[in-house]
Image (cartoon, rainbow, N blue to C red):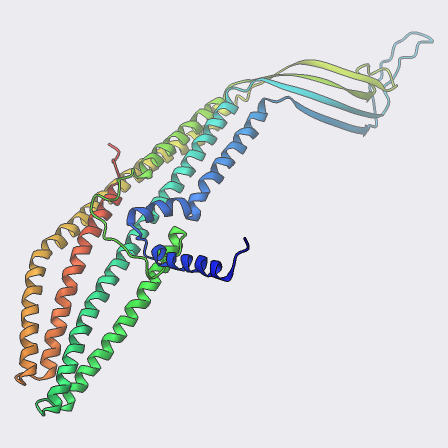
Length: 425
């Protein structure tokens, strides 16, 4: 049966009905952490680094392959060796002054002192360090995600507080209009309240734009568009799972890389053994007294031992020692900075948590003062500016309580992110 207009309309209505459900799907902080680990461009570098490592190892494995080399030369010399034999009528053959030779040599390494093996170990250590550095950089993005996520939550709480104040002022605006009609308040009181309402509408618009900016920045980090209708849930302190700081493993990888370099330097002090075979054409051949072109063939073994490496590698060994000392200092500095940051984050969390009880008491008192001021305004006991000051104080107390409640959780999660799952002993 062909689809009719009614069918198409029903399908379209179904999908349109589903859109609000998608837009209302919540976005948690732990989900943002997972998305940034998968979607951020830094995460894609891990696969590239692995491919680079495989290419390097494949290149080093070719050191064990036979090597084929072709050499050729053509020369002219002003004098050649002449053998004078004092026998009458006997003429000794003389090599030609113009000579040429072209040969191919096939060489197979039998023992290279472990150089290739240590080069591969150094390559693996370097690739492991690069990957750990990438993971550490990726971990740092979680701090940005944490800041943006809680920034959105704080912005939303600020908007709620502004909306409560706006509702309060709108109620009083209607009451003042009736009082103005009855001659109890002046026109100036209504204008002051109207100006305050305009200012709150401006603050709400600024709040909306700020939240749009934060959502756009967070969406760019996690690789996902975040519509304004997407709700954000306040995470509990145990929602985010602890993950190890990759910097600790990175220090170990640096030590492993330096150890591989040290072994590579040691391998350069060992002899290298190979076998070879040469074949080609030359004039003269191996028989120098035959001036005609002749085939050339030679096979044998070759031993090379660079004895100067025993003293020429001393600066390299000293450089490795200094680099090891540098890695140790970097690790100590990182540990110290981490301890300070964790201590500060925990202190912030405890401070904000301690504020909540007094904030709640201040809010209750400010609410009563605001309600009393509203009654006094209606009875003409206080002017509008005095009432607006109490409303603003109530607004600040309400906002301060919610901000401290959110910041306490934010600081706790930040402390866990800084510390990681387990510190190196």
